[in-house]
Length: 109
Image 1 (cartoon, rainbow, N blue to C red):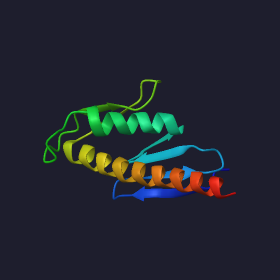
Image 2 (cartoon, rainbow, N blue to C red):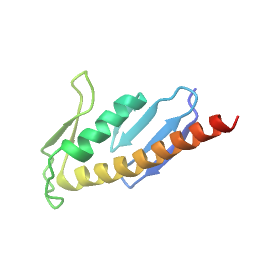
Image 3 (cartoon, rainbow, N blue to C red):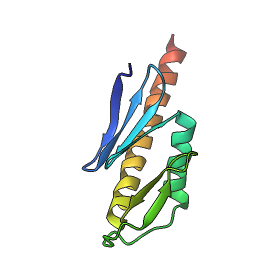
């Protein structure tokens, strides 16, 4: 059983991390996705650096965001896409900080 700790939470979702199994869980809207850390990093890099920008005032759900190898996708509007990016950016910063702190603690032992 996972003991998830929330990295960041927004109105639409949250990102959590389980130190026991190492998985990262993204919940956004009604979708939950489990990532291994490298997959999460790749998804964040894609969303934050390569995915095109959309008008946050566009309320039409027409933006398809692939989330896994098994042909699953988020289907979002502009505002939701913007919120997902903000959620991922904050969660990734906190995850990376946790990793740095963990490495420092290992060095002290």
